[in-house]
Length: 468
Image (cartoon, rainbow, N blue to C red):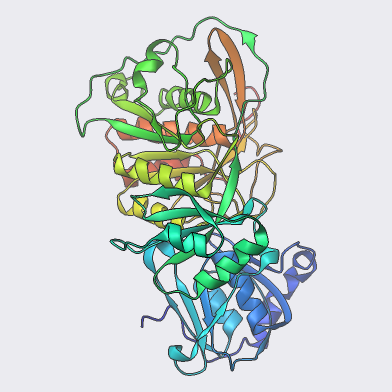
């Protein structure tokens, strides 16, 4: 068994003294265990081990098993620890092993002397559940090549299969109520032949500005005929898209619908329409774009609709949208959505995207808060927050250690002769995706594009001066 970390030492008084200067501010936080993308904070006083592990399971999505004979209590305070350091600090003199699992479902074993002793499953703490949790649903995933009658299994647990993804070998299960879903969770968690995870909802994003009359937009780039392997594809995992005006329409590939195609679309631009325009307008302003307009003609936007006609979508559809983007060999994936719940299945797909050298940009959210927003907080995504017209962090925009870059949070959208203003971290994310596409079209490698984005839109860059 591969051990992620192993420690036989307790936290020393020196460590506690080193972080005591943060206690006054940290103690007022709404969280006493904050598990972020790149750092973990804790302020824990005499917590029973199983309560601690329950919080860890909720924060990470790991399956956690503990030796029933371990009855320790934990008291520790630290800030900005890595995941490996956090486990070492939290578990002190206990042995543990973090073992990677299929599709991101890692397992944490905590034990006295042998991992075989860790036989008691620790269920995630309900208090730590995300605000967008769908309490009466679960997602069941099977190992590749496995065939089981999941519909029969769901029926035995008083539930039903609402949707299936053949590519991910995953099923969306719905139960009559939260209590029935919790009983099913407890029963399924004991099984080693499948994985379970929560499902989260994402409200359908819309534009908030009123329209004003506008002349037709003049887009300065001509679409260039592309062949297999020559185009730069930006996968837009979003709402349904409408036909764009002028030359822009020729940069849009046929839509992929995870759900049924909606019968009709509104008269105002959908969120995907505004994001697509922002992507295309942004790429025009990449470095040397005026000298390399021909290369920019190779860019295409692939709309992947995960909402259909519904007012919301779920983690299950987000994962399918990501999977279709990866299968389409996109170079850039735009995720202008987010929530407070982390999904192991989405994490698995983001790791796959990174392995295939696909850049994923995700919006940090418009709460504003420093709490992690998923999937932006995943280390394999680049989290984007928004700036105002002066280049300062926008008042509505999320911030915090999980955020990687900042970009303009407002953009003009012209649709059917009307002008709209798209505002939010979604818009900032689409702007950065357009920059990435423009740089990739000009011949930069994935690594070079990422470095340029992280450098040019760094959170520590000074804001633009007024009038610039």
